[in-house]
Image (cartoon, rainbow over all chains, first blue to last red; front, side, top):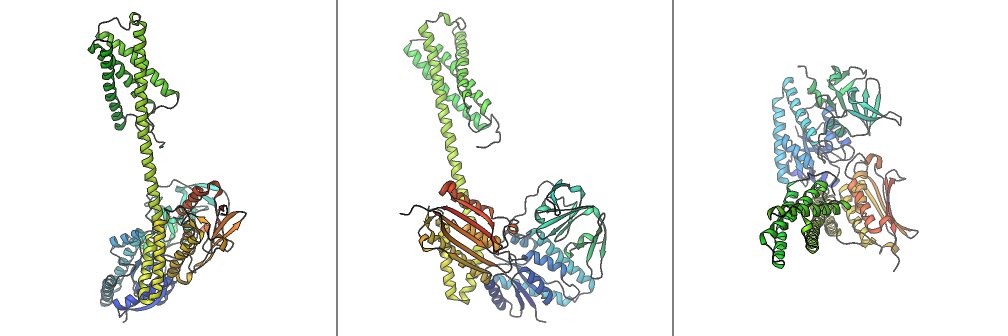
Length: 280
Length: 355
């Protein structure tokens, strides 16, 4: 079977250059498509199910890290194994450091042929190992979990856009100044009343048992101010109070949902955070 | 000047005080010697009087000075407190020193009545003059030291600001991506690679030397913008379109170098780059009521959305600062929504009188 790849890169010349360099370093690799932004990268990846992803980090719309997180969630694991992920970056000190510590593959731009050849070799070995073991379901699950854990760590370490340092940890928030949905009044909401936060477009919805408020702080900044024991991130856009979780459901497709004490809606759990809810 | 309180008797202050003490001792010995020679007095007695008066005044004034203002950066009390402190030091030193001297020479304690008027006057005059001179001397010494440290601080701040400016202009991400594009072009399209290299050359030269010149013609400023935008459009391809509009009669108008650069950079970075379809940038200069008006507009995501991304603050602050330095309150900048949906930055300042 011919190995397949997808390139996500917003600068057309660089996408072409990477394609050309790959043709030299890995003649057998078939590049199925080149996507110019994060959204279409996710769309194309799900349509074509390639075995290797080369993702630029800084892309319009959805950056490479967010695109990877979304893919981790929506990848049809029953149809194809999780792809090998390689980040391509010009200069992202923090992200690069994160990849270094997590032993995730990354390539620096401008791409050096020698470096790319090494990456190609590693990828070939990984794919060969995947093919050979044609694994029983249990081993496949294990491999998937390993991949997810790796992705999770990279995404956590590299942070939102990978270009800025993590904000310094501050004392946990006690009160949140939030506006009431649709109103001009700012309410002081005690953190103890908050059941979960949900990022929506430009805002974060703050939900208590009875009400809903809005704040404008980016989720990344908010997370730094929350006690990680009390609030768990369970999805790219959702942070819940751990003590409010009543039950975890798994649907036919294998997706997880949470019931919260005090709320009726179901909270989606990202595949990346599924490990939090494995039965003890 | 820092607002936070420092310890009053921090090591540096105590060292300064002891240094003053040593100088005071030397000075007192000198006075004692002078008096002993001119008045043919007893060397030992003169020494005791002189040192006692001097050291008590020194202790009183120096300790008092630190108690009153040692927690601040300027170690001398402000206003009347300074004079009062010296007056107090003179009085206490004079009485205390004479008392010790009288005890040493077994004379009636502080019996100034037995002095001739002239001798009393001489002693007082010497004490007052010496103390005031010493205080003034130390005060000037401390003042010049403080000024020196202030100048050093200002220089350090200026250097830091320059470095920060350079860092934002030579943003590594921009530089490495440009080099990566250049590398791709060298094999794919050599003539375009050469053109791009020339633009990069101009851009780097301007960035590295530009902040030193005070002004250059507006035409040169637009040339540099063209270099930058051309580099960016090689990278962004069809996602970036731009228009530079400079009327001929404004070409020679002097402007601070790279004044507009941060605005165009913000437009690209925070306006167009996050937008999948990219957009257009327009830079337009015109004349209005004797003022030069320059507008930088884009069709990007707009101020509201851009606010959540960090890093545009420094560029804007820098433009404002440079306008203020060059034109005082006549230089203005405003930031708002462009009619086309993106961001519009407008700056204006008086046109120099036509030569």
